[in-house]
Image (cartoon, rainbow, N blue to C red):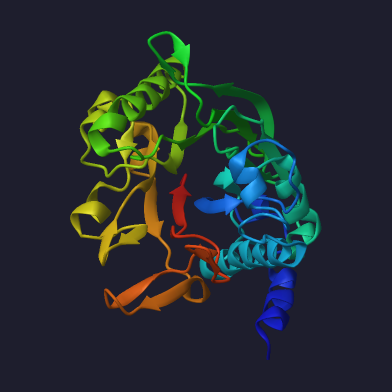
Length: 319
């Protein structure tokens, strides 16, 4: 039986509303690495690079193959956890059109995902986004913040905030982050990650008394100094995984944990984080023997994978 037949069979399992199986909430986050469409919109070097005439030869066929792989992963999560992810945070998405095609041209069209997104001022033209199941929750409010340095907004991804109300009446606030990378040097770029963390702290202060789930690619490990800004505000659900040597990316044979969930203390004891190594997303590295996520491109060569990041999941049990 083919993989896609199995996935089609799973659609009958997931047809029932997730709110009817209400013992938990499944939240997924994934940096889907350079999830561009194949059209050159004239919005910068990365957009040109990821087009059918650009350096990457990013064609319609390759784009739709990536859409199918992302959708297949979401459905695989549904099989693993007994329900589709209720909320999905994404990083490195070019625009709303990419998300619309993901939800309309793949098997995800069978389900009731809605989009929260805004075009950011990021220099590479990549954004964060949130998908959520309308049968499980409704959007109450959305906002987007940009970190500042010396009074000047940074040319980086927005921080997405969505206030949600579950069908059972519970309020939850979700924050999706993608903090600046270490490009240009760890020391030289540190102030940018500090500024992003300061923005997250300020946002959490504005949500005082609410249940908050923050997620994202923080481009640093949980022991980085800037995470102390959140002491007493958010609990980092990745701390123990990091101490155990687990990670979400593998660089030169070593796992590093840079994708994580953080929750308010009110949710910490009701939730657990998992790093998910989806079998069909992995490859074996010969230079530094071991498994790692298969990227879409390895240098200029098309490899057919999705991302250099493993997806992560937060399971929340309210009872």
